[in-house]
Structure formats: structure tokens, C-alpha cells
Length: 158
Image (cartoon, rainbow, N blue to C red; front, side, top):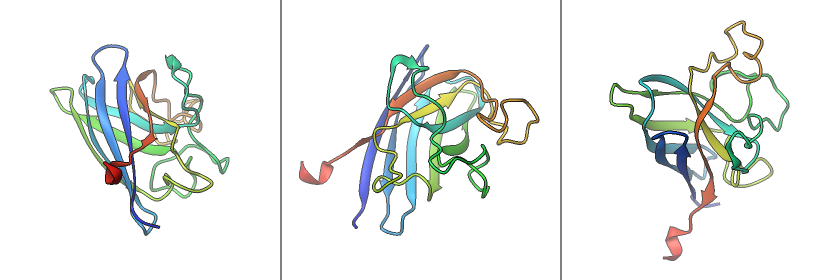
């Protein structure tokens, strides 16, 4: 298998917008890079959600992508949803520069994330450790302020 690529264009309620690029290396690691603007400064939960449905904005993207039926956790935890990518950090200018490498978000195969939503939340993901009733399902990360659908790119044919 060669290098696979995908893109997600992020749009949101207010000024939230951006673009994310996914590159899956032959060793199975997927590198997510990009930039999201219009965020409140600070930490924001960042997840792959189960559905690529934005008919009701980011609210129709379903729960976190969790094909192995695990509890919510941090990207480095054994017990985590495949879609748990932790937090991104927006600077004082509201811009988050993203560079995340993960092995549980492939662009091919049975657990591919292609066609699924990438969601940015209003609040910090507590990584399943917050003690809140939502910690083990959503990380208590709050409202969905931006999202986009991961779609394959075929730039090598252009």
C-alpha cells in the first residue's frame, strides 16, 4: 500500500473554519496537519465522529468513532475511542495549528475514517479523567463549534 491522502474542510457556527490534511503512511500511521481559525483561545476537544452527516450542522455527526466499543480516553491510552484525538490548542489569535500522528485513524480498510466527520469542540476534552458523567463518552468537551467530512484526495492524478 502506498501513501493515502484525504482532506476535511472545517466550517462552524461563527467564524470557525479551516482545512485538515490526512496522510496515511505505509506503516499505518496517519498524520493530520492543518489550521483552524476563529476559535476561542485555549484547548478544544478534537475527534473523529461516527457519521459523515452534516444535515443539522455538526450536531448530526453522531458519537465519537468507536468501532471497538471502548470508553473515551486520550490518544495515548489503551482504552480509547479510535476517534479520540485529544485537544488542539488555539492561540490568543484564535488559530490552532494542528500536527497529530495516530495509528487508529486509517484511510483504508475496515476501520477507515473516510466519509466520517472531524469535529472541533468548544471546550477542553478531559480525556476521560474528569469525573463528569460525560467523561467516559465525550470527554465533556462541550458544544460542536466546527466540523468537516474527511474525503479522499486524488492529487496524484491531477
